[in-house]
Amino acid sequence: MILIGERINAGFKDIKNAIINKDGDVIKEWARKQTDANADYLDVNLGTASNKPEDLCWMIEMVQEEVDTTISIDNNKPVMLKEAMPVCKKPPLVNSTTAVEEKMNELFPIVAEHNASIIGLVMDEAGSPATTDKRIENAGKIIEKAMEFGLSPEQIFLDPIIMPLKFMQPQAKEILSAANQFQLFSDPPCHIVCGLTNISNGAKHKILINRVFLSMLIANGCDAAILNVLDEELINTILTAELIMDKEIYADSYIEAFQKK
Image (tube, rainbow, N blue to C red; front, top):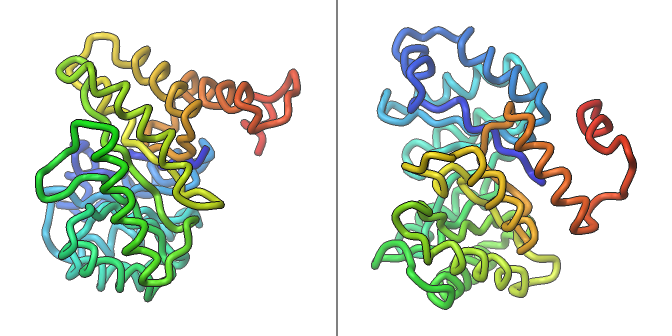
């Protein structure tokens, strides 16, 4: 499982204050904590704290002063990406495009220029899809456009659009079905990613719902998630689900082995 640490996000009060006050120590602390928890990418999200490219670049620089973990730039504005991408020491993951033609034509040239990867949200001008078939149709558009610009399947992360279970319960089955079908587009298949906490939005038993749903997603091909990498039980759930799906070799100490990676 590709773990994308969610915590360097201006939606969290301490990160927003750090951006406003240019307190790099807060950014560095979360970069270190998530890296030590085996994050593969660190999501960097400027949110509503600023709309200045230099502030996004500053966040990336603070992270890279502390760790060498690959950056996930949580911004899809070309003007921001053109400034932020060259700051990244490794080809980043861009979050994200949709299947809208205009948006893809804006973003894919930038992604291709920097040999980056990109998350594709399988939504279009009509908004979030309600059916498996529409998710598959939009995913196909994203893959076709990405390959026009020379991106490989390994550089594409398809997001089936997670809907809150509390408010849109029938959508859960559609999401799982779509994720399963995404694996058939190419060989090797594209990555399948999710913003995990959307499934438990507004629910009482958030932690339990997140863990069970992610296990089910893994069984249907999901191999990446934006999540709290410090949630030890969630990580252990992922490890066990992947073990059951024969993605890892069994050992009595499989959890300990991951922790020592």
